[in-house]
Amino acid sequence: MIRTALFAAALALAACTPGQEAKEETAPVANNSVAAPSPGDVDVHITQEQNGQTVNVGVNQRFAIELVGVPTAGYVWAPKTVPAFITPAGEASGNTTQAQSQPGFTGGNHWEVTMFTATAAGSGEIVMEQRRPWEANEPANQTFRVTIHAQ
Image 1 (tube, rainbow, N blue to C red):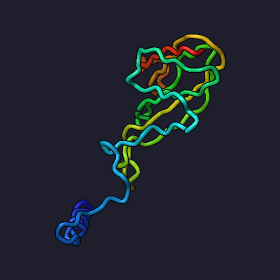
Image 2: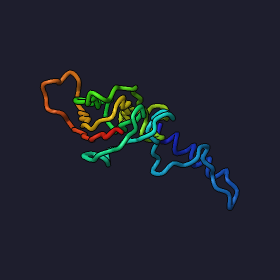
Image 3: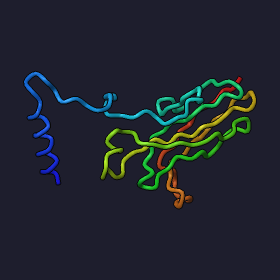
Image 4: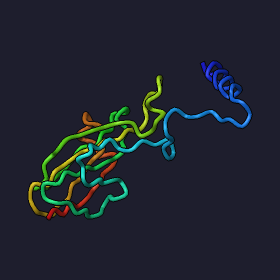
């Protein structure tokens, strides 16, 4: 199978006339990565780089915590603690690389996006844990913390 793919690639390159390069069908994305699949109405995007930080949001503003997980191995992100002034507002997941959309690709990391809305003014910490749900008595594989300040 690999030989067939290499042969097909060699034929495609040989078909190009001198000075002509093979063109990609889709626009290239940095490092073959894919953006987190947050809906367009999400105003604030919180990423792994903001672990331990404070993020300001507006009251009634939808925001998303965008983390990379390994759900194919059973490890999923889920809220452990959420302040009372914040309500869940949906979830989304998707590939982290373009290669994951190719036939035959299995496993790998995936985006896990958890959305929330601040329903009142307040300040409090959201704690997200990555774990296998059936291993509830085991320690979390990873923990993500962010303080939300809603005004």
